[in-house]
Length: 340
Length: 120
Image (cartoon, rainbow over all chains, first blue to last red; front, side):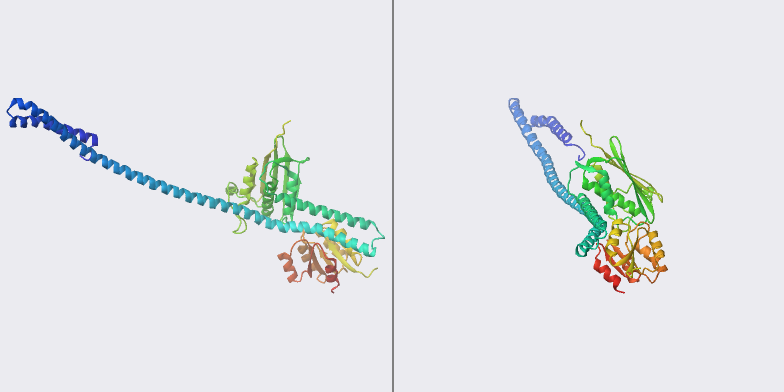
């Protein structure tokens, strides 16, 4: 019976009761009542009796069944509520975890920037100390001349001292300007970027890291290249790529920086004659945290950040490498469209 | 012939060399050179110069690398480094081993260098 559905059960029950009633009720009635005039009256009572009894039986039967259903429904509702609460809780947990992850990522990106700034600082300090040395030399000479008239016999020496001071001032202010451009905090991608200037600045920042035996060749296009982008971020891109090129060269080597001004795009390629990248790593080098450097030596974020910055500029970043021969990194940036 | 103390100064930056020449020529006899190999020739050409001051970062050969070679040939000469860098491990080791007498920072201090030269 358990296997039968409710509608079958109720129909069978109804047929059973109805059938039995039809079969036996009249027989019983005839046995009990002989008077035919009273018979039709009792037939009516019998009819009522039948209807009331079946109604009561059906009422309890359906009620029992529906109660089961209702309980189930209530349980289901409770359960649903429970699940909803659980999902809500989990979502909140996930959201918190995601927020935490994003914060950690931002922190890492910042620490990567700070780490590279730390390396850069030594280089920049040297770059500034050098022109300061010019200014100091000029000052020492001019002071002596002022006090002792030491160069009255050859006044051209005084001119040389003054020129040296000017060179020193120009150079240090150029470096400071370069630093300002690098550390510029702006989210705009609409700034005017002078590609050669950014490359020169990046080289200045890295100057102290460029080892004795590395030659830097600049194969720049004849005219200056201006594009739209974020000046600070593009500095970060080229400092990252050039920094990698310097690190890839173990002892002696050449870094070639080539710029090409094409019709609709600008191509900047940086080629080094360093150790190269194994083929199986080429696909992974822009993945966050991928690094082949010893723990503590690299965050594995440099190229991932570079890739993201280029993506923000709607540009392309390509790597070609041969182990033991060197690597070429190409940055392709779109040129702004000027409406005539 | 003057009896001024003789100094050799090498730096790859022309302006530095010129300024050194102008300022130190007053009290010393100064010989200068630019690149690594020129420096060694300079030492051979003026064997009587006792004091050699070198920049650290030069194309081809670092200041310390140059002094290592020079010191072997001329152990009696006194070598100094004048650089815009903070003191590095390389310079520290050179000081410890007696390869160089002193390390001067750029921007240079006239008095500091003069005192060091006149110490002996």
